[in-house]
Image (cartoon, rainbow, N blue to C red; front, top):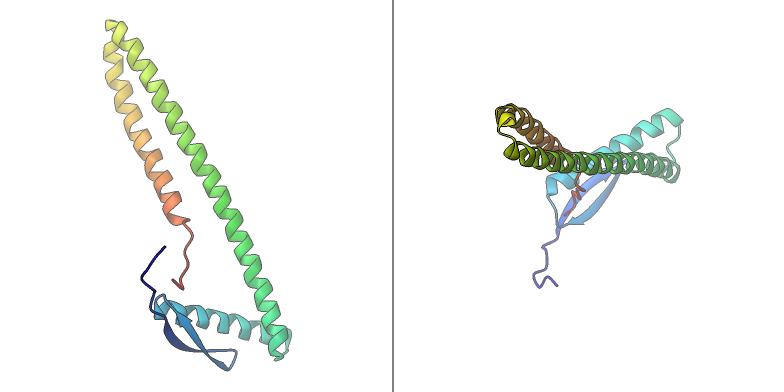
Length: 146
């Protein structure tokens, strides 16, 4: 258990013409940016629906944000599945390369073909590793309030 408490800072924001004080352990600018995004969304909803009733606008904004979250979660799961698939393919390629090396070691005539195979497989495996790392890095959960 963490014995050091995070320092919470009070941040003043305005959302839908209402001032709020929000406490955060995260970056103050991130909190202000999130609040500005919610404010912009709520004002757009109020303009489109021709209503200024805060509770109605807030519910519609919450539904919109929940839909966006669900879409992003689905996309993250798809990317995780794709990353696992790429990892599996990389592992299969590595096992195949090991088998080929063993075969080539036993057959001197194939040793010259080995150099070409190594030249071909290494960049492909490196590219797969790079894509996998990028996918995982781009879609790690991010909590801007911490």
